[in-house]
Length: 637
Image (cartoon, rainbow, N blue to C red):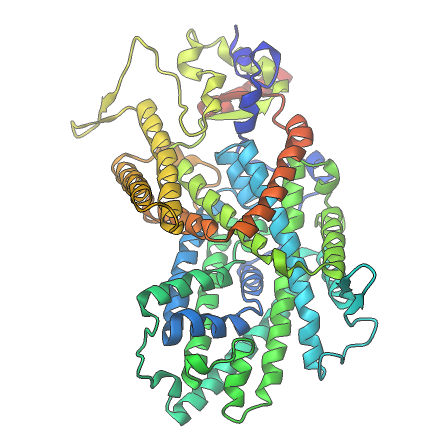
């Protein structure tokens, strides 16, 4: 049997249905572009620069929640140490940002975490990540829109100050409260996003500037009041940690969700002029600005009013009112409104690009991949997203579903960290090529007497973490000698060790975080699980630190971009933090998310798996791709 037939994935007698769940697509290289047929004949506009990315990142991250969150967290968890809670949460978010920065610069295509998962882990996992992100952005955008109308009403004088056609109305016979203002705002933002990426980003930058100015007012005016009055909030007998270090750390876990949003920058990777340079800078700058603003605002507000006396609903406004500045409430309300508007834009911007990426890969209908010739944005996906979000925000109180937003984000963060470990230690060594290149593959195959030694088989892709180039039984090398005379694992065995280690490390993280979170388990069983999970985690970290990373990482995807430091420590820490937060989201949240994910599994089995662009492809070793493509050109000539 020839090489091409042996590596045919999804066709002929060699088709194995289970393999389709772990098939992986090819990473884009510097010389590759998405073909015109997959994008409706047109490409996305390469228009974004670092300031645009910072505007997207800051605008998507800093929502109105910070104007309320600091009061709740200070009263219940952190006390005067709230700024340290924000710092620790910012460092934890920064670990995820490091992982995102490398992958975004290596694989600068629309789709963000979905795209990375498809390249590194497999199709079924990528589908679930994409499906979870769809839920995140839809529910998140609708929830944000529902929060704008009450703040607008306060800005214009009170709860009933909005015109009747925009005010919330209760419909008794169907027992719902409709919000026309929220729906109108969603449709306005949708129209703006359809105009063009540069124009919508400019508008988001203006709105975000209003929010930042409001926060700067809080910092400057509050700092002046604090110095004038001797910072009464810090003059307490309870000390800096009234709830102990544990309370401060609990506060960090709560405020971590205030940093969710910077990943929106990665979803625009395909529209960045210089992605290898600008994406890491944009992500880092956005997160740094958010962390600095959060810390400064919390330092000032906590210093104005003792933590136990803070109003949990309007902590900043009440802090200024206590010092005679009632008019400051208007500026703070303006900040809350602009924060919500910029967050709404940040929620509606990524989803059309997720839909477009999934449609390009055949997992969703081609309708979603069409790109407008005039505006160079996925207009159909944007309009669909806007209509669905507008309907939800108009007719449903989605606040109870807000926890579901966090599931998609944390799953994406976790999968991005796992993908980074795969790229560094076991990058894909086989890639899919169109079956139309079968003649070229056969021609290259004839040049090798023993193609299984050089090319491997399709079984290599059945285990994305564990596979490698086949090594003959007659030459079972376990070690190879290096230049200094020492010995190290051969490439094939190193890949197997690294693959198993990554998998067992993830299992250890799951066991450790689960046993640490469920305090109701029997003590012996709980401590045993903690010990096993901790042992697997530490062993995995040790093994991955000691073995060499794969040389192929240097040429994987686009080169010359940001390289995440301290691998494997940072990715494993990222996995540990995000899995812990996932487990602690609550049973009700997971029940709702499980229903959505189950629907996603059914959609994938019925449509996505059958229409995948990888259904009929030939998998070949990465080392021979250029030779095969060159042979194809010779045959055509």
